[in-house]
Length: 419
Image 1 (cartoon, rainbow, N blue to C red):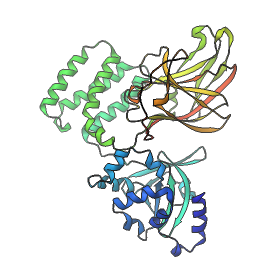
Image 2: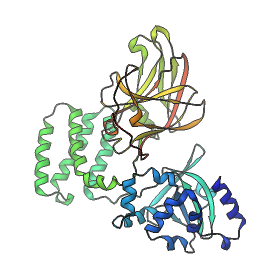
Image 3: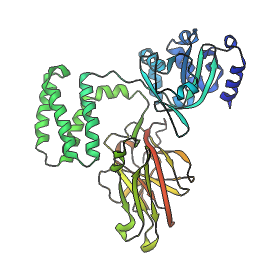
Image 4: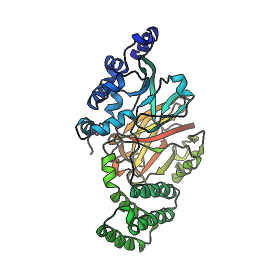
């Protein structure tokens, strides 16, 4: 409501009589953290100049999702150059109102980076951020508030590029039940890293990795091979990962833009115990659709789908966020700590409204340990998550349908207590 009123008031004033972007932000309670950051980065004068510029302004809630230690670092003297780059990643030259943005696919920021723009399910998205309030007028530009802090891409070394590209190629192979192909991709990248001087590894490190590669090559289990290679790659990337750890964790696990990503999920029905429920998975328009019918015959009543996720997928996160359209029934989202899909998992129930797009945030620490539906003591830690699953298991018979737009691992800043 505050921003709706602000837009109306600003629009009624002559352009020269409007407050500047900084003055507008100072008057907005929801942007107080942004104002503090702008002052710390020394950007007050730049954002008060004639411009015009367009600012995608993270709200206080957006900054609250960033770990407090990250904020502390960015506001410190060593972190201010990085803070300045992050803030300029949110500023675009020109006065771009919402109508203009809707018709634009990409904009270049004052940090020299690019931001993608798209509209999806009645939302304007800037990269992965959602515009919450648009067209807040200022004398030197316009403000659009967003729900998260956007992090500019890191500048990668040749070694980082090599390993990250290998991981991006290997993970889909592993998730498509081809661990041997994944292991081959990882092994090739690591062999290149230790064979070429340009990747910056000293001789002692290269010799140690070479010895370890020989050992791993003798491993008969392709899955274990892939994980062993990946641990070496993660260790080599650790310096970059420590830098990235200062950034908020918002990691897309599944977005289903590639219809093939739907194939990662498998169905498990109550037929394993004699039940008669059904279920199917199919690709929608950039979504996954899971539908079928639950039956209570033969003591059945559940239908589920599940998929593995790579090691480290939820590291640094404390919650899962799912965007979905449901059927009015109560669903279960689950996690697993192993690659095998036996009886034990960790569950949280969430409600849906028929045919309405919704978001749910599930704290990982609050997911309840279960075995075949029976509650047990214990909790799962984010770094233990190796699988995601969804259950229709509300002890009711009838058709069900869940359409999922995205599944993310996020940091809310509330780690909770692990049992």
